[in-house]
Image 1 (cartoon, rainbow, N blue to C red):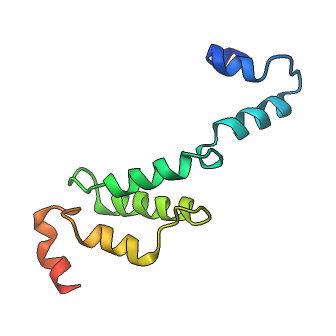
Image 2 (image 1 turned 120 degrees about the vertical axis):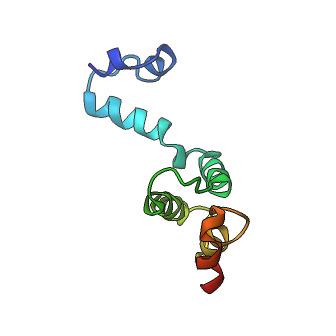
Length: 105
């Protein structure tokens, strides 16, 4: 079942393995972006590009930003609390209708 759900290049990474747990561990190690050399860099870039567009609740956007913060916390690209607040409250990350709210914070 694991093999049938993989693309050909990924199938090659577990070729010859019979134990599903071993297959899974191999795939997890290779596909976990935080274990790769560029994963944390890409995640931080995603954080810096994130903007709240008004689609959906703001709590969803804030949860996504907070998730970036948490996932990067143990990497060389960690985001500080100050980075997090600065990103959200400045640089036109929030729509104009939040301007007064931000002003009072």
